[in-house]
Length: 235
Image 1 (tube, rainbow, N blue to C red):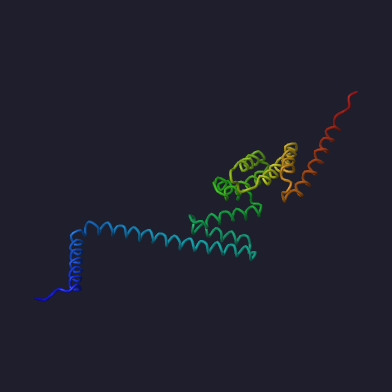
Image 2 (image 1 turned 45 degrees about the horizontal axis):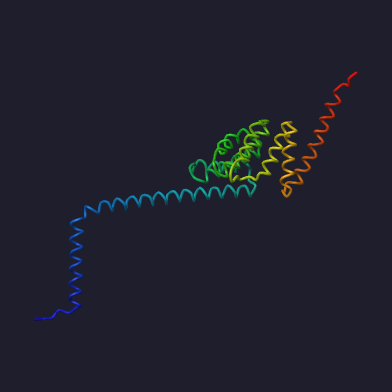
């Protein structure tokens, strides 16, 4: 009688295990095959969408790059706006579209087209991020230039109260002072300038603001002198 060696025993055990696995898989194929196939199909679909979306983002980013290059090369404003508009038209839901809308608004402001820039600024000012704060600040300046001083001051005050704000407090104080000055509310402007000069001695804007404050005080003194000169002395 032939003797079984350990090698033969191991081979028999291996073949037996393979046979059992095959039988198990054959009997339970419907239990695991279809769910696994569904998972694989979903994974492939997600991957396909991701690749498609990344491709669109890359193409949109390239168009943004071309628009920036056009600005650097001092192409005509109409040509630059057309490039930004192309980004919006082709990829309206991409991140690049937000960049395009922002710079289109910028071009309109530089061209003194305030009415054209206003809708974009007002919409972007509602964003809860840094871009929203930047848009709010520009919107406040636009309101002030349109003599909508109360609305400008409301926005600047809100920015001052924003936690982790994009703008420093000293900048916003000076902005409010300038809005009050333009509105003819000289005492309120003086108050804001005084707060800035007392609380921010190391600010990079101190020299310029000091000159503005001195000019404001001269204006206030001249205004008081004119008023006093109009008052007739009592007989």
